[in-house]
Image 1 (spheres, rainbow, N blue to C red):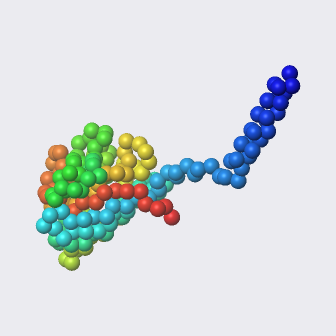
Image 2: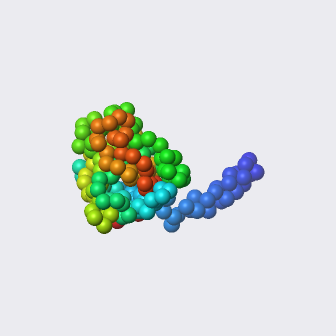
Image 3: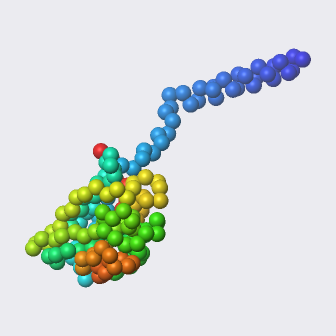
Length: 184
């Protein structure tokens, strides 16, 4: 009886410090939902196009802001593509337009369109293009419409917003992978 009582006291005594080992530490923070993402555009082979595209969650969708340089004056197709891979010289490694809902190609305002159909950017005489609009189809959340880890591609020609499957917008002249950005 004395041995078992002594053993129980020893167990309690040895367990006492372990009960306090985690005090003063805060639990690991859960990663917050992504509210901002960015793609840095790099030129495809034979191109001088570069820039940035920022995606910011807002109350009614995702604000898309693009600043692009090195374009020929005029209209250029602008899309999210399915893979976050711009390693091929011609940016073909980015895959097709991002289309998880299997819709036909269309313009950014169409009710039925590829999630990645963002229309066109308009370059001025100096080759600069700026674009800002709120997209109601793309997402920065962890759902099937999320653009995180995908790519933005700028094309040599205008997207006609109707030709299947990709708007007849020509060669890929810039590509950038969309990654999470530090939220403000």
